[in-house]
Length: 288
Image 1 (spheres, rainbow, N blue to C red):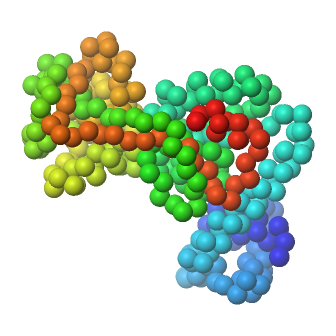
Image 2 (image 1 turned 120 degrees about the horizontal axis):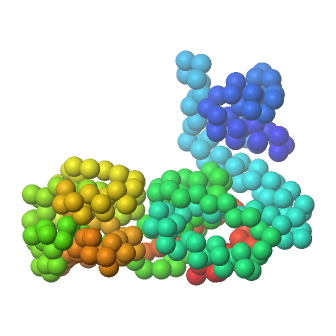
């Protein structure tokens, strides 16, 4: 099998069809289908189910994709590395929103001081999506706020963090230290979207205590949540790093739940099959 076969397979998975893959690679559709068939015959596995003229990747195909993606990516990394032996190159970093807002700028600044000719490309999204970007080789290194879900990912803990319950400064919970968890049931919640690390932690603790919370608002914008809480439209639970400034300006207040803490850990992640360049290793060491 050749690198061409693997690149065709990866592109079919990315685009969702042989026709779209052909258009992206400038290869005729019959040649795309032939390459997939040759892969299946060579390895003795079925990569796609073909139902109603559509392709659906099989479980064997998903496992094969993890290797094919990184073999293709490794070749591209080699091309870039060899062409840029003078230290000019690109490192792709993805982070969760909290880390991206408060920690990443310092890391990138320090990294650029050590590697002034390296270009740093950054994606900031929720932790679930950052893991998916690492798995699909869209980024080289991820910095996330929750447990790793895939056995294909290598993780390194690099920091502890906590989330804090917040409310308006004139809310009845303001500055209180012994709020019972059951008291939250009557409150309106303004929360981050499902899939964000903080939301996942909150939902897990509520489930453990058999408490069902249905947020009145959901937002990907922490700033919007803080402003809404400040207007006493509801309460929330957010990372301390993201609300620290608003607390210091007394725009919102913090309160504490009895016997409940929202602790979490930050992780550096990369794919286990990823070839790490010296610059990538340097960035990881910088964060740790």
